[in-house]
Length: 256
Image (cartoon, rainbow, N blue to C red; front, side, top):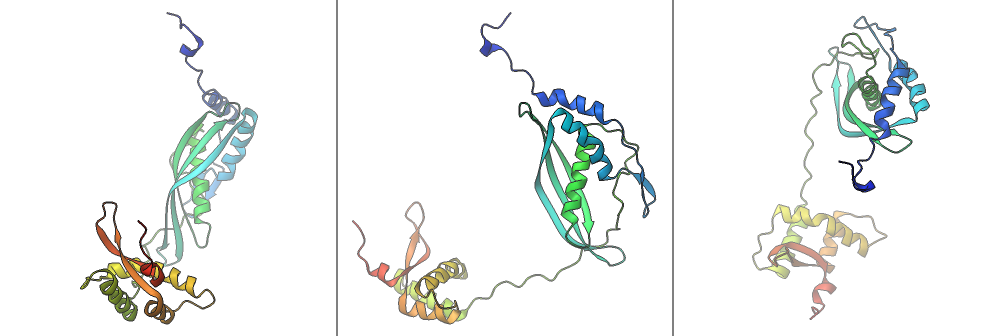
């Protein structure tokens, strides 16, 4: 039965699905003309794949917009103890048809190591290389495609755990005294209250003394001279952790 109107006619498929086979036909095969001197095998370099694919993409108006969705970067070392940066990236490569904006996504994993700051760059290039190989079905032999440098991965470097920040006992006591004075007698002021108020306290001190460097001593003085607290409330009006305010705000009459 023929559709009653143009609205019932299904839209034609996006141009990208028509252009991908045309790009594939123009690329052809890419030979393994490079040699990995470390593990002694032939491979196709990233530049070889780029050089073969780029003219076909330009000819048919196809381009790629990559996006890294996950990243895992660690300090590691080779079996010989040499320090390296190890990067593993999950990258989405979205290929667009310039004629109508239709697209198809290819997700690949890129992994690389480097002694400096190029590990992520190499991983992005490797992920793109394999996106091209897989989307356009570029002929390959075996699974040994890799880049020329293949360091052996050793054990991850064990780093000493970072020390947690220390509580300033004088500021803790000052905040506790304010909580028991301004909020509730005998309020059980906790370390969680202390850490929740450190940033608001720093902001209040900077506002009161914009030309002075922020120090614990200055914060202590501000608490004694201008500090006040009130109980915070959650969305249901239940009192929660104290909230830092100024003495002037605490003394102001509440609005009706």
